Structures are given as C-alpha cells and as structure tokens.
Amino acid sequence: MVLSLVELGWLFHKVQKYCESPKTESTCGLAARAFGAALQEELSEYYRLLAVLQSQMEVHTIRSGDTVGVETQGLTFQRLLVWTKEPKARMKLLAALVEACHGQRGGALASVIHSFVLQGNATLKTVVLKILVQVCRPLYEMLMLWTFEGELRDPYGEFFIGVNLAVDPGSLWNDKYYERSAMVPNFFTQEQGHQVATTGKSICFLREICLDKSPIPGMNQIRRTAEERSESLLSLDWESIEEAYSTASQYLLQVLLDRYHIKLHLCALRQYLLLGQGDFVNHLMKLVEPELDKPATTRMSRLLASILDKCIRCTNSQYDDADVLKRLDVRISEPSQGDSGWDVFSLDYKVDGPLGTILTPEVKTRYETLFYALWRSKRMEWIMSKLRHQQLTEGRQLRGLLEVQGVLHQAQLLLSEMIHFAQEMSHYLSFEVVACAWEQLSIALRSSKTMDQLLTAHEHFLQTVTSRALLDEESKDIRDHLRGIHEAMLQFSQIQERLFSSAILEVEKRQGKSKSTIETFLPSIKAKLCAISASYQNFVQTFLFMLSSHSDPNLQGLGVRLDFNECYQRKDSRLSMSLTYFHRRMTTLSVPSLLH
Image (cartoon, one colour):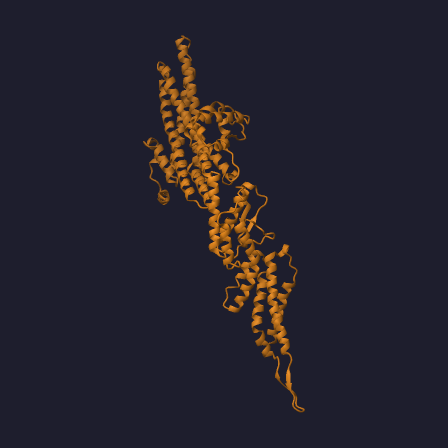
C-alpha cells in the first residue's frame, strides 16, 4: 500500500523534472515547448488533488470523558489509495509520454503522442488527445501557411516539408523542397502528406519560377472553408486540402501549357534533337559534312552555328515559332585525340524558367546521348545513299574496264546489304521508337493534371526511347556490335572511294595510251573488300542473334525485318533456332503491355 503511494510520488517527480528542464525553441522546437506546457497543465490538476487531500487531513475526533478519542472522519491509507487511483493512472500515462517523447520534435513528437491514443481507457484517451491538440497547434499553423500561401515558416525543422536553400532556382521542383518522412505525423497517410507538399510547392513554383504572384482563382474561398471546418491538425478538413491541391496543380499546369508553351518546346526537342524534322536533318547533313569530316576543334562552333542558321532559312524550319528557333544552337563537346567533327557535334536547345525544370542538366545530357545515336544512324544512311549514287553515276565510266567489273559487282552486293540495314535502322529509330513514344507522351500530356504527372510522362518517354534505341545498360553488347557495323560501313566507304578514283584514273590513262597501273591497286582493294565484307557480315549475324534473344519484342521484330529474306539465317545456324523458353515467355509477358 505504501509502495503504491510512493510510486505516485516518483512518477510525479519524473514528469515535473521534464517540465522544469530548460527548453528553448532552438533546441526543442515549438511542438516540444507546447508539449511541456500541456504537461504543466496536467500537473496543475495534480496540485488541485493535493490541496483536496490536505483538507482531508483535518481529523474530527469525538472525545468522551477520559477515553481515547475515536476517529470518525479523516484520511486513511485506504481512502488515500481510492483518491489517488485515477490520478496515479494519469500520472503513469504522463510519465510514459515523457519517456517516449524524449528527444523527439515536430511531427515525430506528434506521432509518438498519437500512438498513446489507441487504448481502451476513455479518460486517459481524452488526456492524450488534449495534449496532442496543443502539440499540433504549431504544426497546424505551418501546414495552413504552406498549403495556401506556399510559405514555409519552420525555423526549427519540425514540419514534414524541408528546404534546401543551396539549390539552383532551376531545380526548385525536384530538389529544393522535399518531404521528411520522419516528420510526417502517423495519422497522415502517405498520399495526404504528398498532397500537402505538392500544393505548397506548386504555389512556390508559380511565385519564384513562373513569376506569377497573382492569387490562384478560388484558393481564398477554399482556405476559409478549411479554417471553418478544422481547428487543429487532428480535425483537418481533408476535402478542402484535396481541393486546394487540385486547384493549385491545375492552375500551374495551365500556366505552363498556355503561357510558357511547354508542349511546343517538347515538340521542338523531338523535331530537332531527336531528328524528327526530315527536310531540316537532310539539309543540315549536307551542309555540315565538309566541316565535320575535318579533325575536331572547339573553334568549329561559330562556323557551324552560321551553317545552322542557313539550314533553318532554307527549310520548313523557318516557319517554326521564333522562340523555338532562338533557343536552337550548336554544341561542340570537348574533343579527344583523333576525334573528327562528327564525334563532337550536336544540336543544343537553350532552356530557362519553367522549361529548365523539365530539361534539367541531367535530362539534357540524355537528349544529347539520344542525338548522337540518331545522328550516327542518319549519317550511315546518308553515306550509303551517296555511295549508291556514286555507283550509278561514275560506274558508267568504268563499263569498258573489264578488270574491275568483278570487284564492282562485289561492292554493289555489299552496298545493297548495307543500304538495307541502314534504312531499316533509321526507320526503326525514327518511327517505331521516337514517333511511337511521342504519341504516348502526347496522350499523357493531354490527361496530365499535375506537374508531377507531366514530369513522369516525360521521364517515361525518355526511358522508352533510350531502351528501344539500344542505349540502356541491358543493350550494351548489342550497342557495341552496332558500332562495329557502322565502322565497317565507314571503312567500306573509304574502299569504294579509292576503287572509283583509281579506276577512273586508269580509264583516263588508257584513253591517253599511258602505261596501265591497274595491277598496283586492284589486288589490294579486292583483298580489303573481301575482309570488310566478312567483318561486316559477322557483325550483322551476331547483332541479329542478340536481337532475337532480347526481351523486348520490338527489337525481336527489328531483327526479323533486317533479315527479311533469311539471307543471314542461311549463313548462321544460330539464327534458325527457335527462341528459348525463357525468351518466348518474356515476349509473351511483354505483349499485353504493348496492347495498352
């Protein structure tokens, strides 16, 4: 009995010690100070109990004659136990709260206290709720200010939204504001926390990046409704919060699409950096070829920029939006030893303001990687077309030179293979990869209702194009073989150039009745042609085998088209084998996703 009463004193001392410990806002925060104040109020109730018990200490006795007085009224141990039963249970709760909340702050502190609400004792539950309401009051004010004004007033790091002030303004949406999961109260769902974070971030983005400081239509009325329906964080009107989230997100998206023409700029990226503007690409290839054949130097950029301007004026690009053309520029990467202009040249698209949030430096690097792959494919198609033109025109001068007819025929056969490969690859990249992914992006943009949905759609577009263009990590070996095929094409181009120049010179010598020199060049060219033909076909056969084993059915279909007449299948027995069970299964699993 005595020990039970002593325990009450020990519990009281523990809670009182916490309340009397120094608490500054800078070390504990506003929520912890509110918790201390709430505990102090509970101790005030305990002090009232002590005053009542003190009054009960006045004992009334009845004395009769010389007999010992008999106590008829007063405070006994049993009565004391009865009086302190409920206060002791309350003090146990307070002591447990003190121990559990030690070192906690902000939203984490509110989560710990809320965990004590889940109990069967209605009286103690009321005590916890009363304390929790006081603790959440500073957090409630922070949430309302952030949600409806986009202002983060959290000097002690208690709110579940954090800020990184060192971040560049262009990275505001992705990096400046972030969610601190440890500070999200456990009576919030993940979706609710995300809605609060996104709503305030949308307002900040409008103010700081879009420079739109006008009130969001309808937001003030939503705020008044929220304040009328909720008095604390526990009774927050989530219908109003969801409405504020939807209103701010849609208004931001409307500003981006209507005022900053985000879709127009994304279309420009597709047209120029992803080579979707056919007449522009072909004319640019023709104009820059003499310069890019030279060794790479950083001094090329000014000349290439003037060529770009000329190309724009001579093609349908001249009718594009002036803002788009102003952003289009030439970029020359830092050249390495032995690089030509083709290795360092790329188109660039300058961004600022809200567009910089979508085209971050990392995203621009990915576009540059895609440009190099697509530009190289277009270049191979361009070179093969030039070689075919050379065979058709200059070949007429060599009809009387019987010694070279066999080599010319062999060159024509090899060139036909290369032209088919180059055209199929270019068609695949332009239409099945970029065009199809762009169509999906266009649909996603029309259905997007938030900034995050827009960014997610664009990210999916980039991932789709990157993987199907053989630029992801899974396709590294296939990409290496494709580069080998391209190198074989370039070597063949040099061999044919030498063949025709030497053969035409031989024709001129014979017409002038000079000494023939055909034996000095023809054997070496024939040997090099045989070697490059064998190397090219070996690369293609391995490339086709890798495509047939790939998990992506689009790449499997590309392999079928590249070997549409089963020419390579007859040369390589691996290509005639059916797909393994694993790859058939992967194909089957991938097909439903394509149908959607």
